[in-house]
Image (cartoon, rainbow, N blue to C red):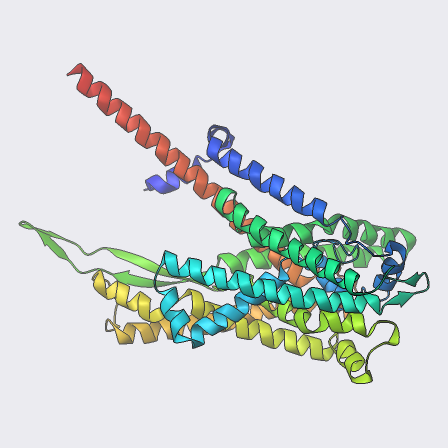
Length: 453
């Protein structure tokens, strides 16, 4: 028998969408905010020779800066006001979450509910400001030391250029942080994720054009082009399958007596996602890899900087064994860490015991928490391996097999996951709108019936 929720979900159509005015307003607001973001990626910071910087960037585009440029939607290659993108905020979120798990005051603040969450968000904003200022100053110093065949990248180096660069880049990051929060509150989906998604998707058309141009000129065989497209579709299908996969634990509720009648105990499921951490581990891992060497790579441009710094930057380039090893280790670490942050087995076991629920064959309380943690750890191992494989495979194919996988695994994972989350939120808004319509109709019929009586 089809439930009411399933019947409503099956009736979500264009007609329901056209009547959901609030949802349409949210979608229009989200699109307008993302358009503003895209405009900002084309506004260069002052004091930069565009031709000289473009030539200097091309010499390093295959490394870390190229990956940073993908997340920033091309803002890095234009050295735009949004060149730092939202990465300082993500780095700040990592640090605050790590401190929350180790600091008792922050942990207590987290348990205070909405007020505690607002305070922690405020600390995250302050730390974002500090990290963005640090990165912006490093970029300003690196730009002053960068030269190309077209001349110096900075037209008038000095403290004035450094100050304007720091103010511009920090202001761009803080604006994007505010814009992401506005999208979350007044739009559809997670604002921060959608900003990253917009930056990634913006580079997809040019990547596909370049791919087909290589096939047309003979630089890439037709067979290899078809194999690459099939591989991308297979990766997308695998991402959708794994992101929807769940391990369901059966929850049983005891029988209850109401008057002289005995009611059978209900049964439900506790869904544990195979990848509970979502796209957070790759984003966190990429952010931590980019944070310490972004300024260092600028400093080592054109042979500048100490030799040991150039060696580190070269070793951490895309496709290098050290880069892949650190990237995989960070993804696995953050998969377990973020799963522990978003899902607490002890709290779940306590809530089940309070409501009379239990897992068949498992004693309520501590034993239930241990069993849930055991199952969660096992499926997180699979989820972490899946994340690492999806994110690292394109880099290995590009570096060692010569396959031009321009749309990287991390970018593909973020794009597909954010699309799925956004569609799910749109469907939930439509479902809520239909429920509201049914409630209004029921009230209207009740009022009409009472009036007739």
